[in-house]
Length: 393
Image (cartoon, rainbow, N blue to C red; front, side, top):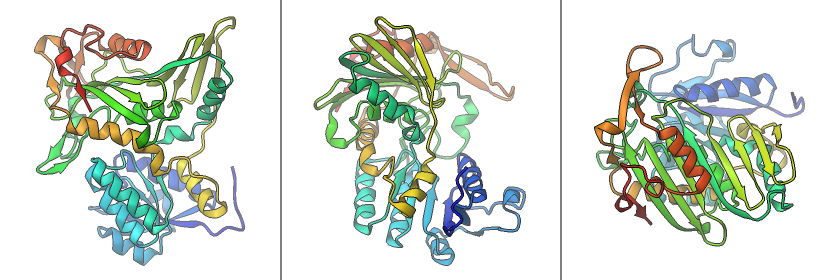
């Protein structure tokens, strides 16, 4: 634990303190106990209760629905934005206009145009902006890059990623925008590739060293849905980079069994598998036994504070997520996700016993095969995925 006794805690406003925002609330509390930050305000449509803020007893933050007014009244130096996807750009620009630095949750925006507007506004305001891809803080990332640089697995042929998660019907009812591609005329793009398993896409691009928008030559998408939603819940994407190997990601929210998502580096003399939520790395290469290691992780809010205090480089500035946003835009502009035929999935009771979940038959193996072979569902022969359903941008 680091405590900077000579540094005044950085005042923070949290916009969106429920749902995933509860994680940010707990993280702020952790860093507040270390003397690094102070929760100055919470922006929520419905104020947090005393019970929700009991860990901050004696240091209760101000609360308001008006984000800008809250930034003004609290003198916040940093804002965490963990609100619905379509609100990210306007809230980010509200903070930027006041010179308030940002930790902006992923995906940073629902459209390329909004992302570009946000990035331009941040740059012009001269503020620091960290995008909330927590996996970029894993110390495994530079360790894997060093393994690749030194030729541990030979010449890299490609990067694959797989995510097999379980989500029940209630997940898609958690908010009005959940599982939607748009609300009225507002883009949402809450699909499996762009939100719940966005880390799989972004982490694969980061390991490939192809995170900038200009690193993308073309994108192929295959978007499907088993649930009765607008967005995709079982999808794959292949990014062809301008000067590097391909990046292929296969993911689902309709898994037979929930698994840890991972990225795999394919070399001609071995492979490196990175379970990014666990910071766990497995190296398998010719002439060596398997080597496994668990790495540490730098918290993104702590990194942002370090950046403001002593100039430590940001781990996830906006330009490092440009390629990911190209994928978001490709998903947004692709044809509507294809509903899977009724015989391709079945239902089971949800884990809490109060609802149901839909399971795509054989999807766990299909997702793993996509990451292993760098191929799309249609190329793997999935009976419900035909080549005509590939969208290229």
